[in-house]
Length: 592
Image (cartoon, rainbow, N blue to C red; front, side, top):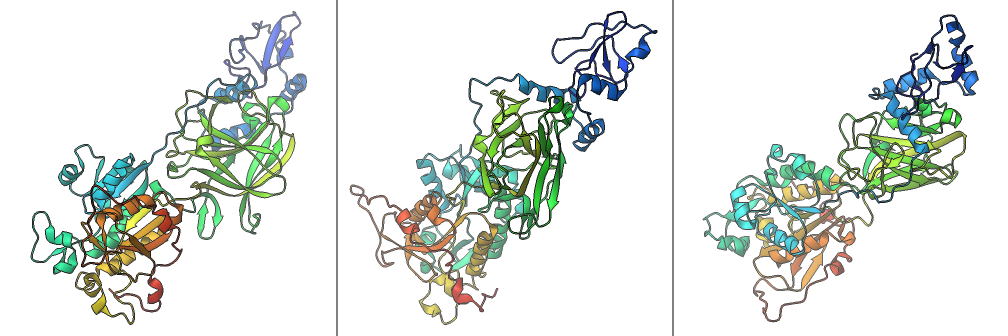
């Protein structure tokens, strides 16, 4: 083995300095001599004076060198395997320097840069009667808005030339590239199939504004199946990674039919000449529920300036996008030690790792939540003040570590040499609790009624009576709702009764079970949707809503004495989980 000329040795152990018979000094690494050997930095050994007569005395066996130095045997084979498994760092000496620098690292004087967050709300169907009002409400609240619309000219004319705009059509999945939705955390979906008068309408759509109760309706444009069902499939596929799932995103573990599998490898202090050794194993029945679990185990030693073990995933083929989530949660069985989680956002070997330490309780299974906002950018054991903020949308590898060292010269207070074990059954991304809706959908009252047994259709709104004539509009709206409920996305489904152009402000009735009829203003529905985004009480709820004002009475307000703003949370708190109105359809599914 050749000792590199630019470092103490490839293993991080200083080559022994030997005196030859002439009293001069020589440096030896394995069986070779060198004219000049450098430590990391600027220190160097004296020049070696070659003397053929004495050259044999300088040729020490590997065992003799180790014995002379008082060090434990370094496993060069394991070192090579480590580099090969992780596709090899560009320069092994950087790895040595990375670890040894921990001995001299000092604490930073400033805080690292905080990760960037985004609260952009996407409004789909933004040029429709409800959608454009949702945009207005969000803007008045000072919230960033992005809109999805089919017609750019119409959208900019209606919403302003500077509107943050995605041109796309939910009925055409290839127009909904997920990259357009990056940074979006919440969605209000007001897309709906277009229903208009058969005989046509005025330029300002006066008949449409009155509602279909006052004209003979027909479908204009794509069918209900294309918009309400297939369109919902396309939209959910496009935004799912951006808004996140209630149960989080499983990265590693086994849960029901879900499994996350990483390719793990040991990355120990062998890369700096140490002798610590770890491994990753699968225990088929090792979890607290008797299911499979991962196991990080090994023996840690401080010999040869070592003192850490770790397991690290191979770089992911495609970076994980966890931007929808707030942190990473681990389910571990503790041993009383402090470990590190390291998340990497680069495919480079010797680069910043975003790091957090976590303590464990001996003998107990526990959930450890590590917010992304708590991650410290660390490079070569030092906090990097000028590091870019953590980018949760581009995660390339994950690492678990047990180390003598913390950061910036500090030591791990729980470090003990010897054997250790850390079983871990789950690693997943999580949403902060209480979870609020990430997808608010404007549906319609009546979606469960067309095929409901014993229902007097003559007393139902036109859309219920004419469901089949209108392309099974309500049936497909219900199928679209079901896609939302099955998606895992935190949702709220709002089912307004007949929509009007009246102002908001009338007293309201919230119901569940899909039984009520009546009217409600589009402006009021927009306010309800925006309020639902911030309400944990609205998560997973489906409800109908109408005003208390009868159809026969117009609702007007006195501008000099407007009604007070409503606290919609009062209504949300009364809603129940699992009530959709489909309960009445059991055994009698709606036919298409």
